[in-house]
Amino acid sequence: MSYTARTLAEHPALRPRFRGFHDRAWPAFLQDTEVNAVFGLIYERFPEFQFGLFDGAGRLVAIGNSIPFRWDGRPASLPARIVDLITGAVRAHQRGRPPTALSALAAIVDPRFRGRDLSRRVILTMRRLAERHRLTALVAPVRPTAKGRYPLTPMADYVAWRRPDGAPLDPWLRVHWRLGARVVRIAPRAMAVTATVVEWEARTGLRFPESGRYVVPGAFSPVTIDRRRNRGCYVEANVWMRHSVRRTAPSARR
Image (cartoon, rainbow, N blue to C red; front, side):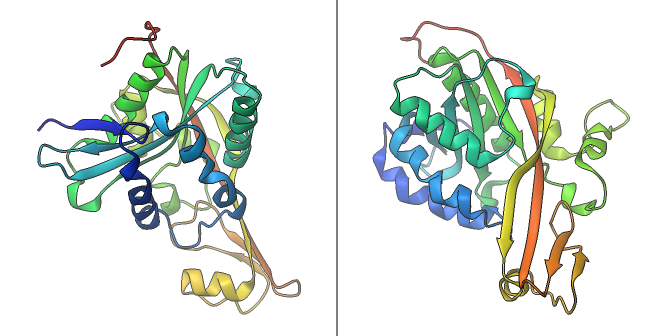
């Protein structure tokens, strides 16, 4: 089946539909308030890098969010946090400083259409956007989809796990790997959530009767509960992966 990518710049009516995809995609506990406070800026500042994939019947089957930013190509200079990636890109845009790379932010497939290779198509669309805008690289702070099954394993160890064919064990890392991407850095504090104990209990359906570290289903690492301070903290690592892109003329379209 053929699919058509339409950017928010080309199709402004897409804007409210992104929210529905995001609401279904993330665990209830993963509410990084700093990221949430600035995420809407990507639609205002970079609409040409937000897109939907439509099937032949005109149905929106997947979305992609990405952001152009300035990067010198060194793994060490990639942002440690998603909020830093977004705010840095916005500041550079405001100052008229041209981006050099594109970062993926989200690739979300409608659950009704999973199993049709759409996540790979979303990443390929991002790569074409990077090429079209003459950016030198596509990077992604990948959130490994199966990491929550191994919350006590450090991310660096988990990333090194391989299948017999040499591909990453994690399925989402594997999609990027098969497209030629390679791990360049662990983002140790990509997302962070701090909330009251009551809020954590409501979001997880669990009870935290005393202070300590708790394994929460779907979380990449334990949640630290401090009942005396009425606070629960969760820090999530992501994995920076880099895709190569080809340089094309600004007018080239695919």
